[in-house]
Length: 227
Image 1 (cartoon, rainbow, N blue to C red):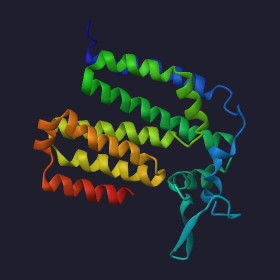
Image 2 (image 1 turned 90 degrees about the horizontal axis):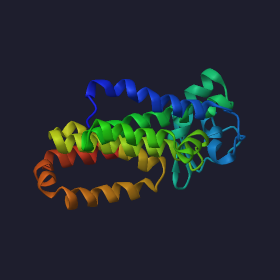
Image 3 (image 1 turned 120 degrees about the horizontal axis):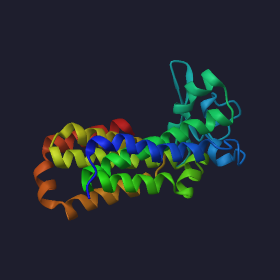
């Protein structure tokens, strides 16, 4: 049995609603933990020197670069305008990472639909959106992992678009996202290395055809720009 592609967006609302319902219920529970707010001092302008391993000065303003030796300040950059507009608080901390979970769900659906079809994609998203571990870890972002999950799935989606269509633009977008991921947390390198090894091993004929000097150069520049 196949599911008409035109029907999938409507059906996708069901797992999204389930995910949002459980993520937003008791938003303040459990209480904020230091691992999910270690970016806060940097996002507020480095008020007390905590969790800023390295910063630089740009146009007279102090700019955090690394929160810890292996953790970049990407999350601090994302939260700087949020804290400016809304101030710090439970909702300000947790709503953005819950929305990042939506990004992960949407790109998961798009990726699996591209690989295995819309029906399989919908089933996969239903399972992920109702998984207590996924919901809880996205909501609290202990790790942090919410941004990494979104970057992994979205970059993988654009890699497969490049493999299928041959447009180097998609490879550039994917590598830019991977560069951000490595800057965000160094262990993202594991994903990049695994993907770099898997593509030629599993898709050698397509990979050999798609990877040219132009596409390789664009990939390198995009990755450096993201990082």
